[in-house]
Length: 538
Image 1 (cartoon, one colour):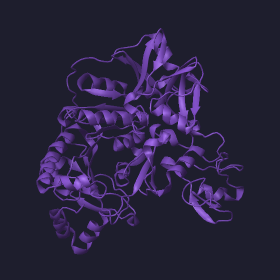
Image 2 (cartoon, rainbow, N blue to C red; image 1 turned 90 degrees about the vertical axis):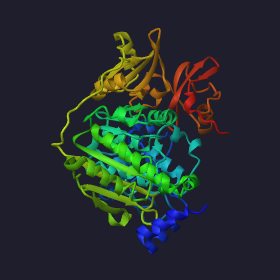
Image 3 (cartoon, rainbow, N blue to C red; image 1 turned 135 degrees about the horizontal axis):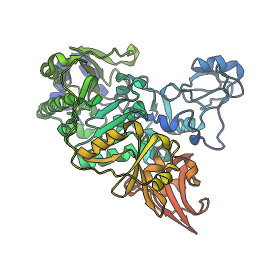
Image 4 (cartoon, rainbow, N blue to C red; image 1 turned 90 degrees about the horizontal axis):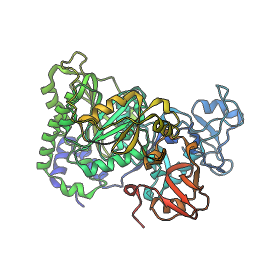
């Protein structure tokens, strides 16, 4: 399908003939495919992910120094640990794991710190199966794939081991300082379907909280499902107008606005974006973005960080939105810390007043069209923290007996707080439990923390979200490991064989990663997989 003529005309005018033609040509090439690994489920120290019987990559003693430097020389080719080349091949392979942690560690010899370990088989196997080729350079957990596999039929996808996220958009973690975000309270104001939400959830850690808002209820349900699969237990999903959630004034350390836009950056991967584009839509989106940014500014605390992003190229929705916000906010805007970008990545860095801006053009950087900008709210900006008046109290306490039953399902129950909402028991990390209560009393929260399930006669009937929670204690119930075909039957909510399952409730796993629960009653198995998550394709 042809690019819109008025779009091409504008691009040639804005970028010049050579650059404009290069961009338009790139929009008619195949889109790169990329994923982002889940540190909570693919970390090198995640023992539950190990695949029984899969050989580990072994590093000889003479390679220890190279391993500690992040490179291993020898017979393993390509950037994926454990993907071995032909005998005698000489190559160098990076082995740094998710968020800087080691994936391939030393086996048969001591590392610099005296420890001995083997390659994380599950992560290596996952990357090999998906056809990972190299890392996304600006993302700690991002990988490019050689081609787009059928993710729907991959059990690791349903287990939340990774998220299929466009490479350019993964840069938002870097712009917010990566691990420096730990413990922060983040508002993701336009959050569905959840790519950036899950990234923020990994970065803020168990001490932090992500409030992910989506105005459209159907999209909010998709967002909630993706949050449950990610399994970090530190997200609250709300469904309301931006102005409603932003009545929590000066309450957030970070407000991220991935604004609804004209979608020019999606022209390469979505013909529908080309059909729907018009100059009138560009103007309409720009006006809506101005309204959203002003609401976002209310919710940001003094000293906090504003992140603005779009997937479009035009100046009116990008730099223009920043200029209009600056004119409105005045002296309350301040500069954000510098963000290092390697020139080889092809990211076009710039400034709009105090905003640092970052543009991804498909003919320059390996990703889709994307624009992002960061600035801070001045520490001495006016205003004080305000929360809207509670409309009702929806979280009730659980009794001591129920709390003891819930605690046995979690690895670190002492760090959690329990409550009940409409008959279902939940757990929230203690650090943000009161914040979630405040949100729930004032806003339509469709999911938060971890849904644990319902108590019947003193025993928990577990919710599917509990199986996907990274903090689940696997000693609570028997674990049933399914082969891939049987796992797909389970994910379709079809009947599965009773063989290999213990009597009663079982945690169902594939490749060592949890998918959900099933209950064996004699020769019959009750498939407890959530209906909203089931595979519907043949």
